[in-house]
Image 1 (tube, rainbow, N blue to C red):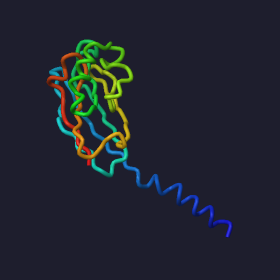
Image 2 (tube, rainbow, N blue to C red):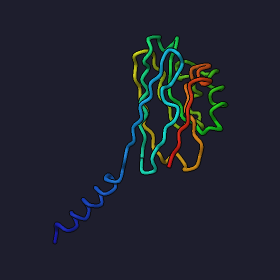
Image 3 (cartoon, one colour):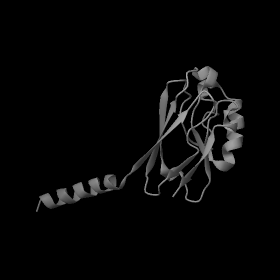
Image 4 (cartoon, rainbow, N blue to C red):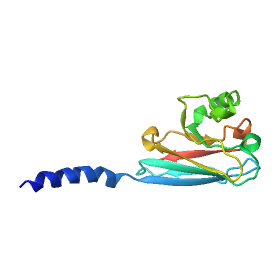
Length: 148
């Protein structure tokens, strides 16, 4: 009889972890200001997403840095413009900007970085965009993210 409560407790502890699913995505960027992926589809059963950005170029982060920034599509332009006034040390993003859902740090040629975020931040049917916030790069380095 004493083992029954322990069994129930273990089942309750294990069950939520079994339903968690992390979905991973890899994007390459280069010295020609391009992402090799322009669309990401996050499945509805993903509880979190991990985006890994690899810079396949050779130029430094200060000369040709890239990052991956996720916002609602309506916020892309205003966030990118605000980023042009931000500092390199802040990844060309206004610190603490609530419009930024997730972002990686700026990287240079040969470097890799990742960001992990909860899909609880996303809503089905909402339009999302990703881009590079290095000044001027968002014009070419952008794509869409859909959820659900």
